[in-house]
Image 1 (cartoon, rainbow, N blue to C red):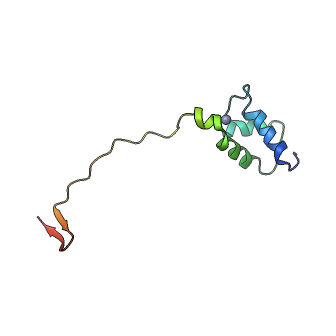
Image 2: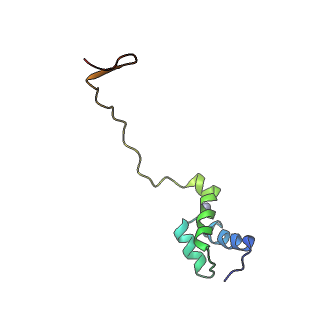
Image 3: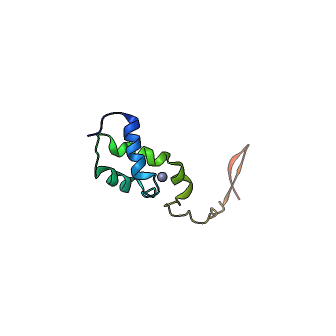
Length: 90
Ligand SMILES: [Zn+2]
């Protein structure tokens, strides 16, 4: 159990995430590395926040989301909308 001192907890996460040997792993791996030796109540939330704030990860990691597909045009409606008269059939 680690005392509730944010600088100590942050340093423990830093050692398991940011040093060159750690290699900036993601949340799950960083969490697993920290829990090998330490544990505190909101550890997972602290690790998630730390990784989300990590400047190196934000710059270096690629997106994991699937790229969006090409834009597709909508079908042309068979009615005309005018400001004065509303919907009108062609
Ligand atoms: Zn990082």
